[in-house]
Image (cartoon, rainbow, N blue to C red; front, side, top):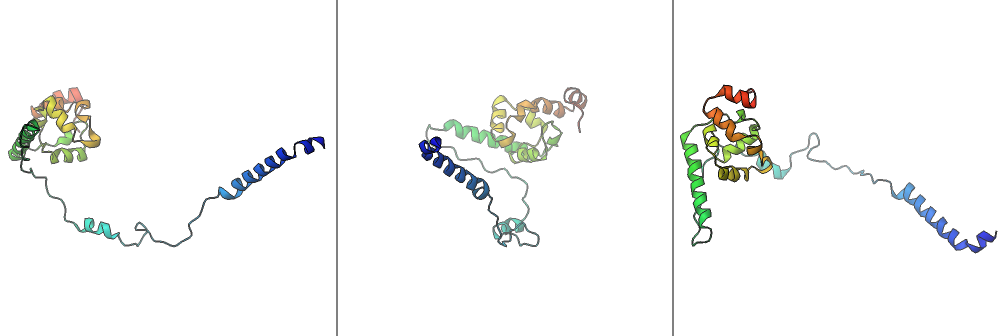
Length: 179
């Protein structure tokens, strides 16, 4: 009894703490349930969302076209950028005009999505890839988004050189069979 009389405040605090923990465990930790009847656009029979209707009704995209060269900046600031952009545009135009289009998915590491992305950049032939310099690789690689780093990792330039030269046996020996 002496213990209770001397430590009654401490016992009261522990009891209050125990009640708070029990309330949290049995009541407050329960998850809230949604009981309303709302329809989602993904529910069966629901109509498509209005914001997506324009995309659904839009005509199919056409083949990528080469845009006109960007205007060179005036003055000395950025002069190199204007020249680089003009040269890049000329290279893309030559590739598009030549009409030489190869199946880029034959390159190891290039799938349909990446081939389409390369086509949008104007890269359509093995000869084009085989002629890339380190600067060209850096420039194209910077535009590949989540595919960055694939050019060097998968040795696209070497693969393209073999395929552009028609060396199927050399390609198969170095990179495996063509699928």
